[in-house]
Image 1: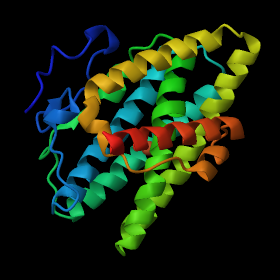
Image 2: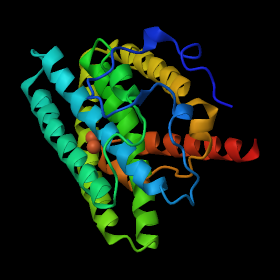
Image 3: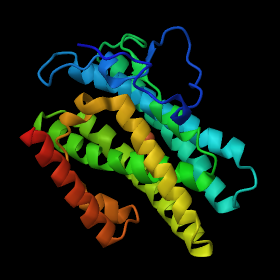
Image 4: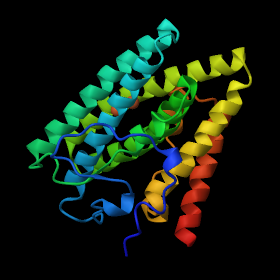
Length: 253
Ligand SMILES: [Fe+2]
Ligand SMILES: [Fe+2]
């Protein structure tokens, strides 16, 4: 049974939606999307469409941060500008593979929770903590798993797409890790801002995904990818332990 959409979400955690043309149908919860079972013939096609839109959220969030924080340090603004370009390339790569395999833009509903959650945060350091250090770091884990899966299925085109994407995402997480660490070093109170932003984002994320949307996450943590992305070994160990516990508790329930 579908859950009611509006009543279960706290509107203060979400900002405005990004602009989309009339081809797109935006949903606010995971349960209202087309969540095909693993063996469904449209599973992969729907994934390309969803991922393409998520990458679009990545472009929009990065561009919004450039527009909202014009006096941030030049180095971090340059990294964010490069990120805009990378994410735009990811949108194009996913659009190409989606259309080449028979997809039609807008044929599946999309979620825009990343933009709504992240652009709603007031400080640049909080946005980078949520977008890059949290959502995109989970993306590194997910893409590593997807590369293995594509390789097992003999889908070389997809292996190459994911490998290119993965290399870029690691750089996005790394510059955010460095910037956040530097900000906290200069002003330890920033750690509290970051913690508050992460708590709000994780509450909002759970309101979008629900138990159903996170129950079947099979991948754990790409330890090598996370170390390359600038996480400390201890942080990687904690992330790995959390992911293992989460998976074990879902399997037990
Ligand atoms: Fe991306
Ligand atoms: Fe990224």
